[in-house]
Image (tube, rainbow, N blue to C red; front, top):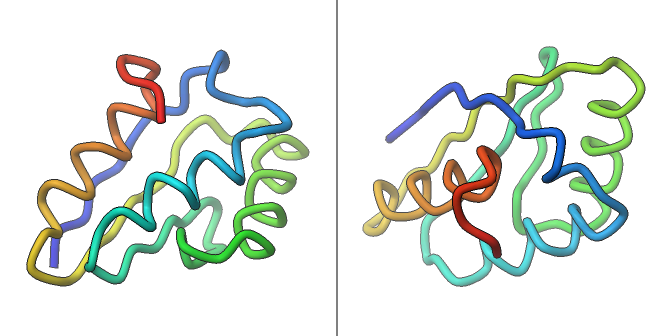
Length: 90
């Protein structure tokens, strides 16, 4: 399992963010979750991501924890980290 704390770049916060996260996470075979303020959600579930992104927006929390378990876990965490910090789009 790979886990990493990541700062969320404010430019990454948008109405499209949940769908972009799910689209990106779905490219990987690993189980991927994102946690913010002790709320954990599957990165492959649109509904879960919608609730989590709404929570991030309401609390102003700029840090999330990305966790992945599976054969491509390192690549999955790296790509999601790049999305959240704004260095790479989905």
